[in-house]
Length: 346
Image 1: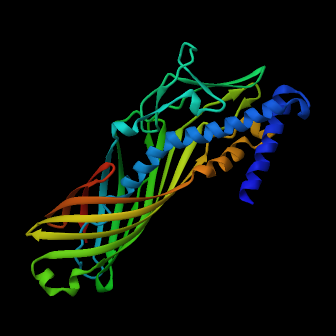
Image 2 (image 1 turned 120 degrees about the horizontal axis):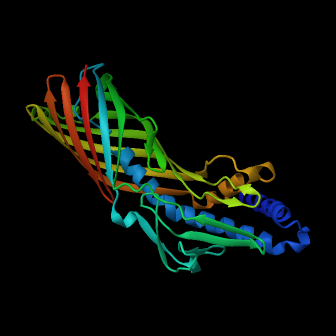
Protein backbone atom coordinates (compact mmCIF):
# COMPACT_ATOMS: atom_id res chain seq x y z
CA UNK A 1 0.00 0.00 0.00
CA UNK A 2 2.78 2.43 0.93
CA UNK A 3 4.63 1.72 -2.33
CA UNK A 4 1.39 2.20 -4.30
CA UNK A 5 0.84 5.61 -2.67
CA UNK A 6 4.39 6.67 -3.56
CA UNK A 7 3.80 5.65 -7.17
CA UNK A 8 0.62 7.73 -7.32
CA UNK A 9 2.43 10.75 -5.88
CA UNK A 10 5.19 10.32 -8.42
CA UNK A 11 2.63 10.14 -11.22
CA UNK A 12 0.82 13.31 -10.15
CA UNK A 13 4.13 15.12 -9.63
CA UNK A 14 5.19 14.26 -13.14
CA UNK A 15 1.88 15.31 -14.66
CA UNK A 16 1.99 18.63 -12.81
CA UNK A 17 5.53 19.45 -13.87
CA UNK A 18 4.78 18.42 -17.43
CA UNK A 19 1.89 20.85 -17.61
CA UNK A 20 3.84 23.64 -15.94
CA UNK A 21 7.05 23.41 -17.90
CA UNK A 22 5.97 22.35 -21.34
CA UNK A 23 2.43 23.67 -21.62
CA UNK A 24 1.61 20.54 -23.62
CA UNK A 25 -1.20 18.09 -23.16
CA UNK A 26 -0.49 15.04 -21.02
CA UNK A 27 -0.41 12.79 -24.07
CA UNK A 28 2.40 14.92 -25.50
CA UNK A 29 4.47 14.95 -22.25
CA UNK A 30 5.25 11.28 -21.66
CA UNK A 31 9.01 11.84 -22.03
CA UNK A 32 8.97 14.66 -19.47
CA UNK A 33 7.05 12.44 -17.07
CA UNK A 34 9.68 9.72 -17.50
CA UNK A 35 12.47 12.25 -16.92
CA UNK A 36 10.89 13.36 -13.65
CA UNK A 37 10.86 9.77 -12.45
CA UNK A 38 14.54 9.43 -13.38
CA UNK A 39 15.35 12.70 -11.58
CA UNK A 40 13.74 11.37 -8.38
CA UNK A 41 15.71 8.13 -8.59
CA UNK A 42 18.99 9.99 -9.05
CA UNK A 43 18.25 12.38 -6.18
CA UNK A 44 17.55 9.48 -3.80
CA UNK A 45 20.68 7.61 -4.92
CA UNK A 46 22.90 10.68 -4.50
CA UNK A 47 21.33 11.47 -1.11
CA UNK A 48 22.29 8.03 0.17
CA UNK A 49 25.95 8.30 -0.86
CA UNK A 50 26.20 11.91 0.33
CA UNK A 51 24.66 11.80 3.81
CA UNK A 52 25.19 8.20 5.02
CA UNK A 53 28.81 8.75 6.24
CA UNK A 54 27.56 11.64 8.39
CA UNK A 55 24.75 9.65 10.01
CA UNK A 56 27.20 6.79 10.66
CA UNK A 57 29.50 9.29 12.37
CA UNK A 58 26.62 10.71 14.42
CA UNK A 59 26.09 7.30 16.01
CA UNK A 60 29.70 7.27 17.26
CA UNK A 61 29.42 10.80 18.58
CA UNK A 62 26.30 10.02 20.59
CA UNK A 63 27.71 6.72 21.93
CA UNK A 64 30.64 8.14 23.88
CA UNK A 65 30.78 9.24 27.49
CA UNK A 66 27.50 7.78 28.71
CA UNK A 67 29.06 6.17 31.80
CA UNK A 68 31.38 8.34 33.88
CA UNK A 69 32.06 5.45 36.26
CA UNK A 70 30.64 1.94 36.78
CA UNK A 71 30.99 2.14 40.56
CA UNK A 72 28.02 2.27 42.90
CA UNK A 73 27.36 5.75 44.25
CA UNK A 74 25.67 6.89 47.42
CA UNK A 75 21.90 7.16 47.36
CA UNK A 76 20.70 10.35 45.63
CA UNK A 77 24.22 11.44 44.68
CA UNK A 78 24.03 13.86 41.74
CA UNK A 79 26.72 14.40 39.12
CA UNK A 80 26.66 17.22 36.57
CA UNK A 81 29.21 17.62 33.82
CA UNK A 82 30.22 19.76 30.85
CA UNK A 83 31.46 17.61 27.99
CA UNK A 84 33.38 18.36 24.81
CA UNK A 85 33.20 15.80 22.02
CA UNK A 86 35.63 15.64 19.10
CA UNK A 87 35.02 13.38 16.11
CA UNK A 88 37.87 13.00 13.61
CA UNK A 89 36.68 12.59 10.03
CA UNK A 90 38.58 9.79 8.23
CA UNK A 91 39.73 10.49 4.68
CA UNK A 92 37.81 7.48 3.35
CA UNK A 93 34.49 9.04 4.39
CA UNK A 94 35.09 12.53 3.00
CA UNK A 95 34.41 11.72 -0.63
CA UNK A 96 33.03 9.13 -3.01
CA UNK A 97 33.50 8.38 -6.69
CA UNK A 98 30.57 8.58 -9.03
CA UNK A 99 30.23 7.95 -12.77
CA UNK A 100 27.74 9.10 -15.35
CA UNK A 101 26.66 5.47 -15.72
CA UNK A 102 25.42 5.62 -12.09
CA UNK A 103 22.84 8.23 -13.11
CA UNK A 104 19.63 7.85 -15.07
CA UNK A 105 18.89 11.57 -15.43
CA UNK A 106 21.98 13.62 -14.58
CA UNK A 107 25.38 13.92 -16.19
CA UNK A 108 28.46 15.30 -14.41
CA UNK A 109 30.11 18.44 -15.72
CA UNK A 110 33.09 20.45 -14.50
CA UNK A 111 33.13 24.22 -14.03
CA UNK A 112 33.90 24.66 -17.74
CA UNK A 113 30.77 22.77 -18.76
CA UNK A 114 32.71 19.69 -19.92
CA UNK A 115 31.27 16.23 -19.26
CA UNK A 116 33.38 14.33 -16.71
CA UNK A 117 33.30 10.67 -15.63
CA UNK A 118 34.26 9.45 -13.11
CA UNK A 119 34.32 12.32 -10.61
CA UNK A 120 35.31 12.38 -6.95
CA UNK A 121 32.74 14.41 -5.04
CA UNK A 122 32.42 15.20 -1.33
CA UNK A 123 30.17 13.49 1.18
CA UNK A 124 28.49 15.61 3.84
CA UNK A 125 31.75 15.21 5.84
CA UNK A 126 33.96 16.27 2.93
CA UNK A 127 35.21 19.51 1.44
CA UNK A 128 34.11 21.60 -1.54
CA UNK A 129 33.36 20.68 -5.14
CA UNK A 130 33.26 22.40 -8.51
CA UNK A 131 31.21 19.75 -10.30
CA UNK A 132 27.74 20.33 -11.71
CA UNK A 133 24.82 17.93 -12.06
CA UNK A 134 22.97 18.61 -15.30
CA UNK A 135 19.78 17.08 -16.63
CA UNK A 136 17.14 17.87 -19.24
CA UNK A 137 13.43 17.75 -18.39
CA UNK A 138 12.48 18.43 -22.00
CA UNK A 139 13.80 20.36 -24.99
CA UNK A 140 13.34 23.75 -23.30
CA UNK A 141 13.82 23.06 -19.57
CA UNK A 142 17.16 22.13 -18.06
CA UNK A 143 18.09 21.42 -14.44
CA UNK A 144 21.64 22.47 -13.56
CA UNK A 145 22.94 22.44 -9.99
CA UNK A 146 26.21 22.48 -8.11
CA UNK A 147 26.91 19.11 -6.50
CA UNK A 148 26.50 19.58 -2.73
CA UNK A 149 29.53 20.54 -0.64
CA UNK A 150 30.55 19.00 2.67
CA UNK A 151 31.21 20.65 6.03
CA UNK A 152 34.92 20.94 5.12
CA UNK A 153 36.10 20.16 8.67
CA UNK A 154 38.74 17.59 9.63
CA UNK A 155 37.16 17.32 13.08
CA UNK A 156 33.68 18.01 14.39
CA UNK A 157 33.68 19.42 17.92
CA UNK A 158 30.60 20.16 19.99
CA UNK A 159 29.77 20.66 23.69
CA UNK A 160 26.93 19.09 25.65
CA UNK A 161 25.64 18.72 29.20
CA UNK A 162 25.23 15.44 31.03
CA UNK A 163 23.88 14.64 34.45
CA UNK A 164 23.04 11.62 36.60
CA UNK A 165 21.34 10.75 39.86
CA UNK A 166 21.83 7.54 41.82
CA UNK A 167 18.84 5.67 43.17
CA UNK A 168 18.29 2.50 45.17
CA UNK A 169 20.12 -0.81 44.68
CA UNK A 170 22.88 0.59 42.51
CA UNK A 171 20.57 2.06 39.88
CA UNK A 172 21.51 5.37 38.28
CA UNK A 173 19.62 7.54 35.79
CA UNK A 174 21.65 9.43 33.17
CA UNK A 175 20.66 12.18 30.73
CA UNK A 176 22.55 14.13 28.06
CA UNK A 177 21.60 17.14 25.96
CA UNK A 178 23.28 19.39 23.42
CA UNK A 179 21.79 22.49 21.89
CA UNK A 180 21.85 22.67 18.10
CA UNK A 181 25.52 23.04 17.14
CA UNK A 182 26.26 24.97 13.94
CA UNK A 183 28.64 23.32 11.48
CA UNK A 184 29.89 24.67 8.18
CA UNK A 185 26.86 24.15 5.91
CA UNK A 186 25.00 22.18 8.56
CA UNK A 187 24.06 21.58 12.19
CA UNK A 188 24.02 18.74 14.73
CA UNK A 189 22.11 17.93 17.90
CA UNK A 190 22.02 14.95 20.30
CA UNK A 191 19.93 14.19 23.38
CA UNK A 192 18.86 11.09 25.29
CA UNK A 193 18.63 9.23 28.59
CA UNK A 194 19.90 5.97 30.06
CA UNK A 195 19.75 3.71 33.09
CA UNK A 196 22.82 2.14 34.71
CA UNK A 197 23.00 -0.73 37.18
CA UNK A 198 26.04 -1.65 39.25
CA UNK A 199 26.86 -5.37 39.08
CA UNK A 200 30.01 -5.60 41.19
CA UNK A 201 28.01 -4.85 44.36
CA UNK A 202 26.96 -8.51 44.33
CA UNK A 203 30.57 -9.77 44.48
CA UNK A 204 32.34 -8.65 47.64
CA UNK A 205 35.81 -9.60 46.37
CA UNK A 206 35.44 -7.12 43.51
CA UNK A 207 34.45 -4.19 45.71
CA UNK A 208 37.22 -5.10 48.16
CA UNK A 209 39.81 -4.66 45.40
CA UNK A 210 38.07 -1.52 44.04
CA UNK A 211 37.00 -3.20 40.83
CA UNK A 212 33.68 -1.91 39.52
CA UNK A 213 31.40 -3.43 36.89
CA UNK A 214 28.14 -1.98 35.58
CA UNK A 215 25.73 -2.28 32.66
CA UNK A 216 23.90 0.56 30.95
CA UNK A 217 20.94 0.79 28.58
CA UNK A 218 20.50 4.12 26.78
CA UNK A 219 18.23 5.67 24.17
CA UNK A 220 19.36 8.68 22.15
CA UNK A 221 18.31 10.80 19.21
CA UNK A 222 20.70 12.49 16.81
CA UNK A 223 19.58 15.08 14.26
CA UNK A 224 22.09 16.15 11.63
CA UNK A 225 21.35 18.50 8.71
CA UNK A 226 23.29 19.75 5.69
CA UNK A 227 22.84 22.10 2.76
CA UNK A 228 21.89 19.99 -0.23
CA UNK A 229 20.76 20.68 -3.82
CA UNK A 230 19.83 24.32 -4.43
CA UNK A 231 17.77 23.84 -7.56
CA UNK A 232 16.06 26.44 -9.73
CA UNK A 233 13.92 25.91 -12.79
CA UNK A 234 11.88 28.19 -15.02
CA UNK A 235 9.05 27.73 -12.55
CA UNK A 236 11.09 28.48 -9.42
CA UNK A 237 12.88 26.73 -6.58
CA UNK A 238 12.11 23.03 -5.98
CA UNK A 239 12.68 23.24 -2.19
CA UNK A 240 15.32 20.51 -1.82
CA UNK A 241 18.17 22.65 -0.49
CA UNK A 242 18.39 20.97 2.92
CA UNK A 243 18.70 17.29 3.89
CA UNK A 244 18.35 15.94 7.44
CA UNK A 245 19.26 12.59 8.92
CA UNK A 246 17.33 11.52 12.01
CA UNK A 247 18.95 8.72 14.00
CA UNK A 248 17.26 6.79 16.82
CA UNK A 249 19.80 4.69 18.74
CA UNK A 250 19.43 2.08 21.46
CA UNK A 251 22.69 1.26 23.22
CA UNK A 252 23.80 -1.51 25.56
CA UNK A 253 27.09 -1.01 27.37
CA UNK A 254 29.11 -3.04 29.86
CA UNK A 255 31.94 -1.26 31.68
CA UNK A 256 34.60 -2.35 34.15
CA UNK A 257 36.99 -0.11 36.06
CA UNK A 258 39.84 -0.27 38.54
CA UNK A 259 40.54 2.49 41.08
CA UNK A 260 43.96 3.59 42.31
CA UNK A 261 43.36 6.23 44.95
CA UNK A 262 41.98 9.23 43.01
CA UNK A 263 42.44 7.76 39.56
CA UNK A 264 40.04 5.36 37.84
CA UNK A 265 40.66 3.50 34.57
CA UNK A 266 37.62 2.16 32.71
CA UNK A 267 37.13 -0.15 29.72
CA UNK A 268 33.73 -0.41 28.01
CA UNK A 269 32.15 -2.61 25.39
CA UNK A 270 29.34 -0.87 23.49
CA UNK A 271 26.79 -2.38 21.14
CA UNK A 272 24.14 -0.19 19.59
CA UNK A 273 21.40 -0.39 17.01
CA UNK A 274 20.42 2.71 15.04
CA UNK A 275 17.38 3.35 12.87
CA UNK A 276 18.26 6.05 10.33
CA UNK A 277 15.76 8.07 8.32
CA UNK A 278 16.30 10.88 5.82
CA UNK A 279 14.18 13.93 5.03
CA UNK A 280 14.37 17.00 2.84
CA UNK A 281 13.78 19.89 5.24
CA UNK A 282 14.66 22.99 3.23
CA UNK A 283 12.52 26.06 2.80
CA UNK A 284 9.32 25.56 0.89
CA UNK A 285 9.91 25.77 -2.86
CA UNK A 286 7.84 27.97 -5.15
CA UNK A 287 6.72 24.90 -7.02
CA UNK A 288 4.89 23.71 -3.89
CA UNK A 289 2.06 26.12 -4.79
CA UNK A 290 1.16 23.66 -7.53
CA UNK A 291 2.64 20.24 -6.74
CA UNK A 292 4.27 18.72 -3.60
CA UNK A 293 7.82 18.15 -4.85
CA UNK A 294 9.42 17.96 -1.40
CA UNK A 295 6.78 15.55 -0.10
CA UNK A 296 7.19 13.30 -3.12
CA UNK A 297 10.98 13.20 -2.75
CA UNK A 298 10.64 12.47 0.97
CA UNK A 299 8.48 9.50 0.10
CA UNK A 300 11.17 8.40 -2.34
CA UNK A 301 13.83 8.72 0.39
CA UNK A 302 11.99 6.06 2.37
CA UNK A 303 13.71 3.60 0.03
CA UNK A 304 17.09 4.42 1.63
CA UNK A 305 16.03 4.19 5.30
CA UNK A 306 18.39 1.79 7.06
CA UNK A 307 19.17 0.05 10.35
CA UNK A 308 22.77 -0.38 11.47
CA UNK A 309 24.44 -2.26 14.33
CA UNK A 310 27.80 -1.07 15.69
CA UNK A 311 30.29 -2.63 18.08
CA UNK A 312 32.49 -0.04 19.79
CA UNK A 313 35.23 -0.13 22.42
CA UNK A 314 35.88 2.76 24.78
CA UNK A 315 38.80 3.45 27.12
CA UNK A 316 38.47 6.16 29.75
CA UNK A 317 40.52 7.70 32.54
CA UNK A 318 39.03 9.77 35.40
CA UNK A 319 40.85 11.78 38.07
CA UNK A 320 39.35 13.36 41.19
CA UNK A 321 40.06 16.85 42.56
CA UNK A 322 37.95 17.19 45.71
CA UNK A 323 34.37 17.06 44.35
CA UNK A 324 35.49 17.76 40.79
CA UNK A 325 36.44 15.10 38.26
CA UNK A 326 38.31 15.40 34.97
CA UNK A 327 37.67 12.60 32.51
CA UNK A 328 38.98 11.76 29.07
CA UNK A 329 37.87 8.90 26.83
CA UNK A 330 38.47 7.51 23.37
CA UNK A 331 35.99 5.32 21.48
CA UNK A 332 37.10 3.29 18.49
CA UNK A 333 35.74 0.87 15.93
CA UNK A 334 34.99 1.98 12.38
CA UNK A 335 35.63 5.58 13.54
CA UNK A 336 37.58 7.26 16.35
CA UNK A 337 35.78 9.62 18.72
CA UNK A 338 37.23 11.44 21.74
CA UNK A 339 35.54 12.98 24.74
CA UNK A 340 36.75 15.32 27.50
CA UNK A 341 34.66 16.42 30.48
CA UNK A 342 34.70 18.22 33.81
CA UNK A 343 32.18 16.90 36.33
CA UNK A 344 30.99 17.96 39.76
CA UNK A 345 29.52 15.46 42.22
CA UNK A 346 27.05 16.70 44.84
